[in-house]
Image (cartoon, rainbow, N blue to C red):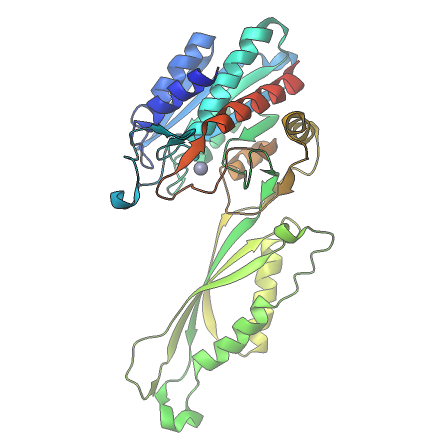
Length: 380
Ligand SMILES: [Zn+2]
């Protein structure tokens, strides 16, 4: 079994599918799935390749979907790599290559898990297995899962359970899973004040002084999120403060501030907006605001999928996994529109997007076994 995971992964790593390019990865995977009896639909949108594969029937049970992406981030400076990033290399039990952990390794593991499950239980399966892949996860994610989900909803498709293969493990395989992600809200503030000579500050309005008091209050705001875990709470980060470049003895009349809110499912966007406006009024700051929501929060608090994932991990590990919502957002945010239960479980994330990305061979094998167990629990 392990050799077939590695064979598939080797083929995928050889392809430099830098986002949003797929360059044939999905063809290799669809060939494997066709051999297992899947039917395949391709949704190519501009330069993005998307693929939906299904086997079984949604009439006699639930639909379990595996979600993944075939694109990778660029390798960065080649001098920092021990081996060529697109020549898969096994060294001391580890397989090196761009995308090995994020997430061609997880894809290879779940494809082989599905193959094994069908080999053992094809006739006893209740429901349906689907595989959804995109080549636009690492980039701007405009023509990937977002668009495919719109099409699937129009076709009245459904996904009951969705497993996202993103690398969620931290120290060892299966120690952490994600049951959702926080939302992401961007704010740009364009402040206008009164410029002037630094020595005659009384007749000017120093926006840097004013806004620093505002920011100080903003980052200390209590969002009143009751009964919530530490890694789920709302966090504010100011990422840029920029004032026009004037001469040394001038107070600038303009200031630009860029802020991001990673917000929990406990609060709403309108609540955040209200709090910020109140604070700006309190500090008597006049400004234009530009809000942009890039991701809504989503969470799977409980249910059969979460139970099955935790139990399957417990079958191989001593302890239950940490259930977390940390990190950036994922394509799970789009699947959430289908009202699915969503859990993310994948390889270790310690080398992703870095030089010398690798995956332990033993982890590939173990992850595949966990995926297989999950399918058994949900579809038998
Ligand atoms: Zn990824």
